[in-house]
Image (cartoon, rainbow, N blue to C red; front, top):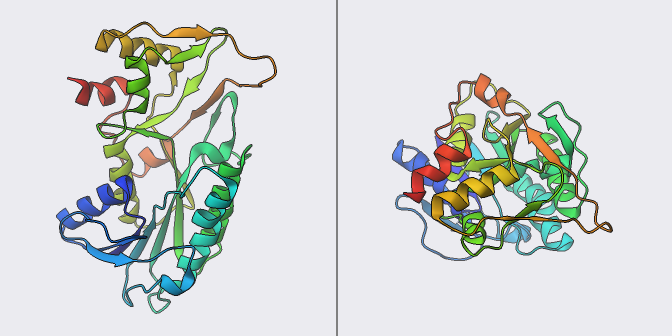
Length: 276
């Protein structure tokens, strides 16, 4: 396959490496000239600037894995619905079988009240981030290409240690009352799932990519603290003026039904693989 990775950050680079190691021809598009994984053919362009997008004429697949340039509505608008539309227009139309994968987020489901969500659940994004991602999903779905929006939960792993660091510093908290659900996916499984989707005979319109076992935040934090010998996390009484729900429990059984097998099915195996 000839595959274009749009957005070669950490996740896009992980996907690119796996594809190159399997013998595929891989192009990596970034905003600036930075070192890409060995074997990836570099392209420079900004998805928000259509004239900068000079894409290969012959492609079998495109993975859109762009990260927003900031935490603002405008940054998300440019990175997702605008950027996705620009890339769709720039992709070669000569290959009617070209596959387009859009890396989205389970944030499109909104906050949640502790219930289960899957691909059949109507998205209800509460903030601009989820709203812009959902707009981009619709851009991709309306394109002429066979497409799939991969809704990833929070990625963790050896190079994504934000939660670990907060536990180590004694800053991690959980709601003092009630349960707060967490949904995560190890960075290796995130990349493997994207490559797996590229190889499916038929692309589902949407796939959730999340560890099979949603977890109680308090349980995860206490396990991590005990494993590291860090201070026990504390329960935090919620500010009555801020409505914080119980979260959601993401069901990724559709992905598993396609034949995908998680290398790290829960936080225990995942964190345990790199914490020593």
